[in-house]
Amino acid sequence: MSEITNIALDAMGGDNAPAEMVRGAVDAVQKEPAMKVFLVGRGETIEKELAKYQFNKAQIEVIHASEVIETAEPPVNAIRKKKDSSIVVGMKMVREGKADAFVSAGSSGAILVGGQVLVGRIKGVERPPLASLIPTEKGVSLLLDCGANVDARASHLVQFAKMGSIYMEHVLGVKNPSVGIVNIGAEEEKGNALVKETFPLLKEEKSIHFTGSVEAREIPHGQTDVVVCEAFAGNIILKLYEGVGAVLIHKVKEGLMATLRSKIGAVLIKPALKATLKTFDASEYGGAPLLGLNGLVVKTHGSAKAKEVTNTLIQCVTFKRQKINEKIRKCIQADQLSDE
Image (tube, one colour):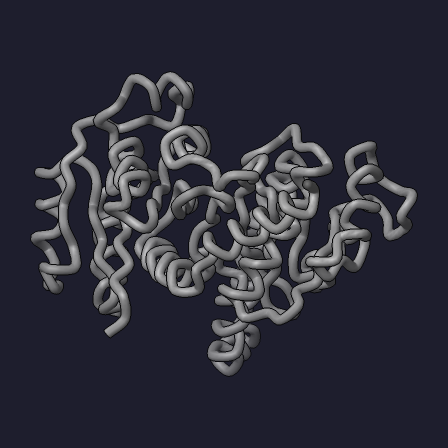
């Protein structure tokens, strides 16, 4: 039997907590027998939701945490003061080895601060990036950093490229993944100061398959497997991506329902259209891991529903089975040795 992956899930985080968190956990354990989920939060509330479902009792356990960190709270103060919050309790479980991963749809700031302060960075990792899978014409690409480090340095982006390559190869199965840096043109001499400084460093890095600059319009075409940038640009790309995708899906559905003829056509193309639109559903790809920590921390959308929670929990199992943290640690240690 496969080794069990223990996951602490913030049952109180997000717009749809705790109902969708609990439902997602139940669906996940029914799909993946080698998983145990610890639902962290207000015990009585969680137990009331759990009572609605049938599941293997050995695979889900409730861990009581009396406090909740709200989205608007200052992250550093919240982590420091709310020691019995679902986020702090869940992350401490990872730090103490009681859980392999922590998943939350709660406060992004608190998750980023808590990940670094409570779980801690792998020795040698300068800044942990948030890495999000985005749909493309060819499948998916990994965008990082998409929210953690707004003021990044060139050395940070080089580490992002290395960690992103490891993730794409061992979690997604992409051999020798291509890496591109977000830029305003294909020419090497273009870009801001950060891009101009980072480009030659990526070009010289032998451990990655660097293919040069990638313009924003080429990202949806899947020009590169790993898309590297600092978090300001990355978050804008991600949010615009999600917004445009939602509008296009809405417009397609609206157009198909406009006339009797289009409605008849919609019936004929429904199976193919449904399969195509599914590839642009963010919930299909799970959450965004904060790469480079001593344990796995994954941020899901604040609006996450059960399907996204389920996919994120299963994503954590793959992360552990492929020993992603160990591979990142080995990569960073090798860099440190080469610099000595």
